[in-house]
Length: 399
Image (tube, rainbow, N blue to C red; front, side, top):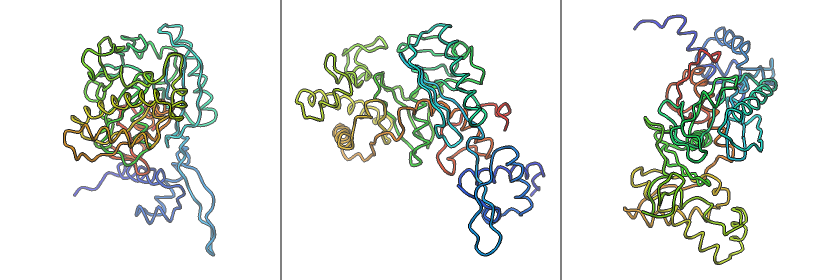
């Protein structure tokens, strides 16, 4: 067998050490020697290089056991950061994350959405100022990713179906015209699923159902987001639930979105939080509407599971008001509709929060950066699972 070239050996050792430090809180030279089988001179040399690059930093000294106190080293998650952006009809939401996927800065602006150059120039200024503040307090921003309420083109550069926001045909170039950082787009449901993968290391195969005011979905297969060749997998919101039924924002009738939106729950002039507040008091009409709504959600899930027989994750605005009893009730309704009768699956609430779309979007930059740094190609990261592998030129990221 031919020996590995010295440059490849050095790269391998660096990746192995970076990977181990990433997955462990405090590490000593002795631990690295024991766990990785590297010599102390090699470890020392790489620690100095990684520290000089800002990838790691010295931690506290270990307690003495009678001799010299050992120096701890730890991964620096703020070495690089990324920003996720969510544009809503009346709000602009920004989240910056570090390499552990933790939110380090966030900002919300009550800014009505307008599909105009003036709007995109304005949000560009907001994003640039936010990014500058992030870099001042933390580390270099890898890029900015927009979580989009719409279906994207296969190359993720154009919104090909944007009826919710009225921006069909909008390009990434237009959105990012004033942003001074590399930019990407991702469907908002896919972004939320990426965050879900990060927060839950047990997810392998699942259908994510986001019960937003405009519902959506995403598919996870083999521990990764599965978008498909056309970037539109998991768009369960436009399956026909009731033929010829209520009108949907897509222009058709009877779609899942028209029946499973939490906007169907409140009465006139009642808010969604107000509905759930009255529901807790046991009001009969509210319970009837809740039962109808749960029946429609259960039917949508049962239909999806005829194609993808996987676990189910429930997220979105409505999920904020559902408790474990509601989820158990929903699972019973889905099981009752199952073709197989004895179907066994897990149905649970999402473990992410209201910032999941922005967090998952930002991971389009942090995840491939860690892939390049630690030599990961496929499979989960050691401390938490890796979301989808997005192709990015890491040479521009300072790896």
